[in-house]
Image (cartoon, rainbow, N blue to C red):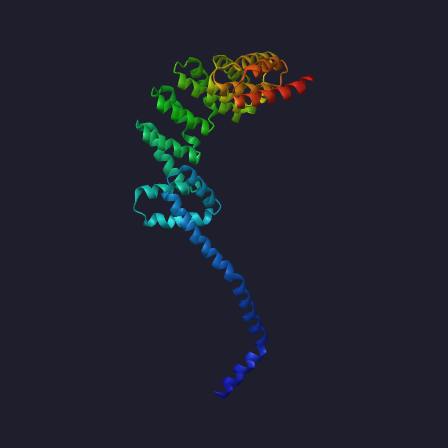
Length: 325
C-alpha cells in the first residue's frame, strides 16, 4: 500500500506541470466558452419565441418583419421547425411551419408546397384558394408555376382570377408573357382590366428593360402613347415606374417618340385629375425637353392645387436651366 502511494506521488510529481496545465486550460475554456454557450442558449430561446409569433401572426407587415429576423438565423430556425413539426397536430400551424421552412431553403418543404399549389391551379375555381396559392407562390418565388398560370390566363374569363394571375406573373417576373399582355391590353374593353394590363406591362418593362427585344420595346412605347392620350391614371403610374428616359434610349426613332410623348404630356397638364397633372409635370422633367416650358408656364397661371403647383415650378426651374432661358 505504501509502495503504491509512493508510486502515485512519484507519478504526480513528474506530471504535476501537465496536470496544472490541463486544469488551467479547462478553467480558461470554461470562463471563455461559458458565456458563449449561455448566449447561444438564450438566442435559441428568443428565436423559439419569434417562431411562435410568426406562425400565429396574421398581419402581413408584422409577419414580414418577423421573417427578416428569422432569415438571419436559418440553421437554428430550421432545427426548431423540424422538431415542432414532429409534434404539431394543427393543420394550419403545420402549414405555416412548412412555408417558413421553404422560405429558409428546405427543398423537401418547397417541393411539397409546389405540388399542392400546382394542384390548386389546375383544379380549383374558388377565388380564396387561388389567392392563397398564388400568394404563397409569389412569397416562395415559385417560378415553375408561371407557364401553368399563363396558360390558364389565356382561357380565363373571370376578371378577379385574371387580376390574381397578372399580379403573380409580374411578381415572378415572367417576361415571356409580355407579347400576350400587349395584345390583350390593345383588345381589352374592360376599363379596370385595361388599366391593370398597362400597369403590369410597365412593371415588366422596368424589370427587364435591357433585355427586351426591339419589337416588344417599340410596342410598349406605342401602347404608352395611346394610353397617355386617353389619360389613363394607371398608365401614368406605369410610365413613372418604367423610367421613360431609359426606355427611349433603347428605341431607334428616339426623337419622334420623344416629341410625341412630350406633346401628349403637355396636354395632360390640363387634365381634370390633379394627380395626373402632377405626374405629367414630373415626366416632362424626365424627358428634359425645353419645349415643355411654355406649356408649364401657362398651366402655372391657373393651377390651384398646391402639390401640382410645386411640381410645375420645379419642372420649370429644371427645364429652363437646361434650355438656358
